Image (cartoon, rainbow, N blue to C red; front, side):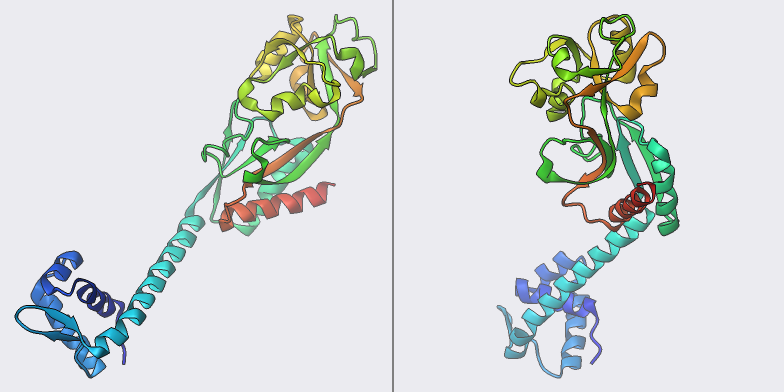
Length: 299
């Protein structure tokens, strides 16, 4: 017996409504067409599925036996259609990768791209620059599918990540600063210095770049808030404060009038590719895998 999903859908609608007219309206078909389809299904089954009289429609014993199986088959078929639709959409999708800092470190971005493109030649990558006030680089609000971020992240349980690079944190300052003539500076010598800080919206990342954990409970003195490389450079040249930065970002700041120095007494920075923990789309996982392979190669 070869029964189509449409036959089961029509049968289930009548069985749930116990009224041919209402079932026809629900299915957007005419009542005569629905009745004809049910009679054809009954012929295939070899038994009546409904007991009819002028006042009501009731399931027959055969219909009652068939209904739960029909409902389960329809539910599974709907789930199958959704799964196929997700895969089709994923295959045609654009993967949006956020960043607030360039991930060019050691050529890792081209290496990730080449591996991802080899695995998914049908997919397209779109890089999105995100302001510093969003430390998740577009993950939190869903505008990016994956993102290059600095750790730590806010709400870390919401995310997973792969560390791309671990770099010393240096201190940048105006070349006229009294400490600029030292090659290495103890962090304790910076405790009374005004610091440039990320906006409050950056969450734990603001504290991290102020090295709050290394201050022994002494609050940081904030000289100015900065939300871009340009603002940071201008504030440094103006002598508004000093700032910690990853070693790989030194070329962005040392444009003239600014120097960077090694710092003793603070941990290195960690740069990572992150994604939402509940996002298991194949396209995202393929990019993560490409990142893992590229990182292994460049280690």
